[in-house]
Length: 175
Image (cartoon, rainbow, N blue to C red; front, side, top):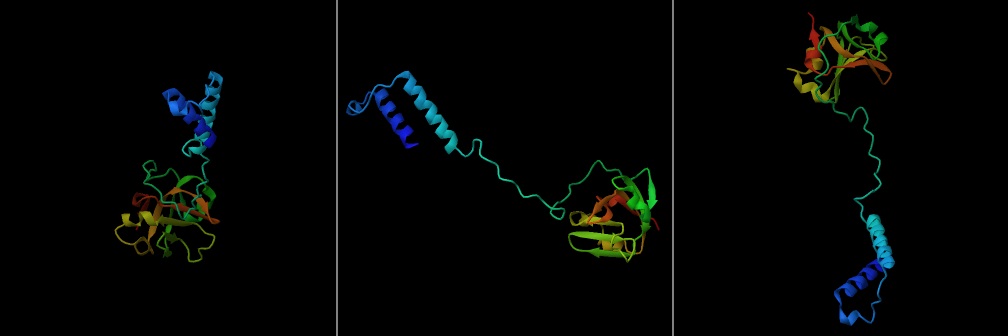
């Protein structure tokens, strides 16, 4: 970089006609000027981090880090309604599930609505923390011991089938 800068200084002084630099200045050929300009351009690319800088890998968020946005494309009804015990047979399908919520848990990050007290490995509904303010009262109390119909896509999460309730319109109390 210093070498190119000194060549540029010599070139600039020669172009300005500075008499005190005349003894140090040699006349550059067009080929030398072009070579000097190319070297300077190459050094600028290397020293300019905004150009072609390697991009660092961004951290990959986990499911707990993700905050869903409001979905406008998810209907509040489904073509197929099944009992909660059959939900696991409809993975990756958009269905309605019916059953009575007998156990709940609110972790602050999500509210889990379970259809059985033996919840390990069984189907459940989840309301994410970012959506809990959409309900008139805490979902874990409101839905407990009520028969509900929930609409959504059945997916596996930590070896359990689930439907994430995206809005209050996707869960209805039936009784």
